[in-house]
Length: 228
Image 1 (cartoon, rainbow, N blue to C red):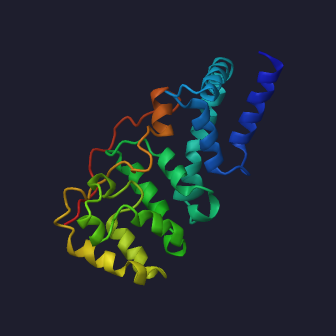
Image 2: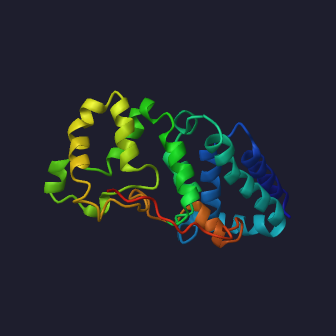
């Protein structure tokens, strides 16, 4: 192995295993390294690096990748830490940790648990979630129905409950009243869907397809409860 490549791999592994590095940065590095389908020069060069990393340190990188994805549970699912206070881009972390499979209930429950914790203290996140639910005027103006509906992050029911406890309640009172009164009318679009801000394949899905992460032996087949 070339000395420079050996140095690069060593530093990469150190960053991916460091407790001082945020999960966002770790997932971003892995996404850049394992991104597929791009024709840009940068990604072409990273693909070559990835192939060398896999060729020379296959088992080690596999263990590190699994450790990085376990961190989501260790840092956020099994603790009381707020992902909003500890990650520069919490939405990116939650989305890339998901497999992109709507039938994996355990993943979605974990993500929604993390997304809901301390949400009332993070108005920017609440604003972001409400982008999926336009007000009545937005509906009348023909806002694309594809932009409406529950994302993987949080259910409409939980979003309403959290917003009512937050300083933003008055700002969203009319929208909350509208959606509570019209859930049945919009039942066909009020269902779990891939977040509209990024319909690309998630990092976990990429790494499962490349066999760096194992898919569950038995996948969840239940769907989340649909609105009444």
